[in-house]
Image (cartoon, rainbow, N blue to C red; front, side, top):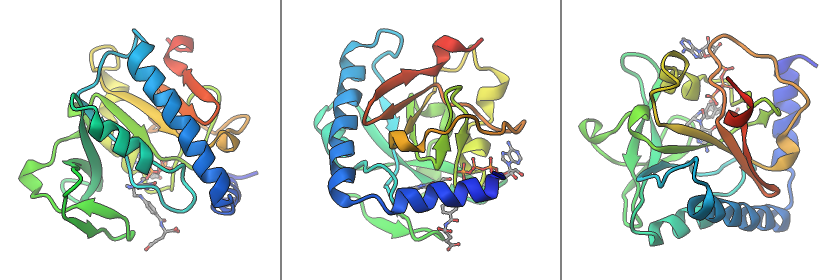
Length: 204
Ligand SMILES: Nc1nc2c(c(=O)[nH]1)N(C=O)[C@@H](CNc1ccc(C(=O)N[C@@H](CCC(=O)O)C(=O)O)cc1)CN2
Ligand SMILES: Nc1ncnc2c1ncn2[C@@H]1O[C@H](COP(=O)(O)OP(=O)(O)OP(=O)(O)O)[C@@H](O)[C@H]1O
């Protein structure tokens, strides 16, 4: 299957998920997230955590965001689309009382001035939306290249930087193998309703 058709097939499947199953998955995924925060020594306590607002059948993030807001040691961020110097994402602080605006894809973003946006390197953990993933941690997104451009620094100095990229998805979004492009930034781990997988253990 070519990657355009694979993307469409996976998106159709994601969108058709009944909301009862969606909610069940989100609840289980949150349990794995809270276990990861309390147990995993390889993943130090993150201060800055980026999530996203789910759309189009993506694994819900609302309850996870509510949970993290209650843990006062974390600051929560959402991606905001920026166009200079290229099309990439900045990250804006997200609080319960944030004023929101809709971006070009009709996804809500915090209405925060450009000079207050942080960049990807300033995030400790980033939960990533995705269309598909494989067991090596390769990710297929919506095809805009936003995450790849925003985290391209990971391909240069992966040993020094601390930013952990963690997929947040339904387990049925896993496929046997995704084609790997030179610009693709792999995931360090993934959380699905079935648990947390640490890809960095299996990679040089
Ligand atoms: N929830 C969520 N937020 C996210 C992403 C995402 O994948 N999920 N992104 C990850 O990169 C960025 C936005 N990237 C996107 C890239 C393409 C389309 C897209 O093709 N959407 C429509 C077309 C809508 C239009 O053109 O107006 C589509 O459903 O076909 C959407 C988001 C930032 N925020
Ligand atoms: N680091 C980069 N520098 C220049 N162009 C890039 C870079 N990363 C991605 N691109 C461009 O973005 C396009 C889309 O990439 P890709 O299909 O991997 O996106 P995606 O990861 O599925 O999307 P998204 O991250 O928005 O969910 C590619 O065709 C490529 O031209």
